[in-house]
Length: 155
Image 1 (cartoon, rainbow, N blue to C red):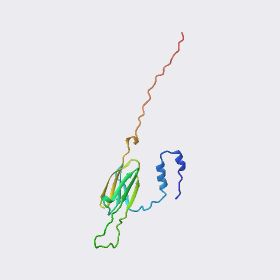
Image 2: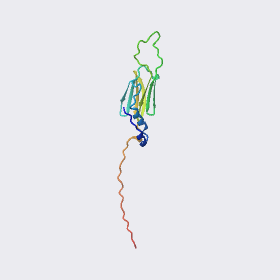
Image 3: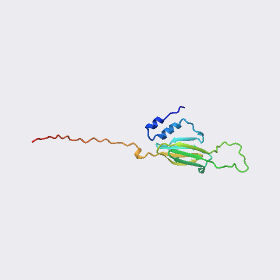
């Protein structure tokens, strides 16, 4: 993939650094992006849900943090024993630690999170402030000014 140089745009734009950094990062593959699997769905006009398969993790082993438009989900399992007198012959259930980051758009906030049946559901909502919403500007007719002709009278 080609690398695009955004340096000429940095000279003529203000406040788009985050956008340019995101575009730069699109060409770089992320390491370890397959675990845990997740879905992103739209649940309403301004509502979204991220569902992650975190089977085997409890609420205390998962942390969710939202900071500056980045949602970070981390999972760390404690040392788990197989039980007294038992021996693990095959491990097919992943129990490794993970960290997954999601870029959030402006004004997207985390509403809540639930863990049910091995799925972590994170609900998001876009709250656009009133001052950023489009508003209709009424056009009023300019008042008609009466023109007055002044006469200079010389006596």
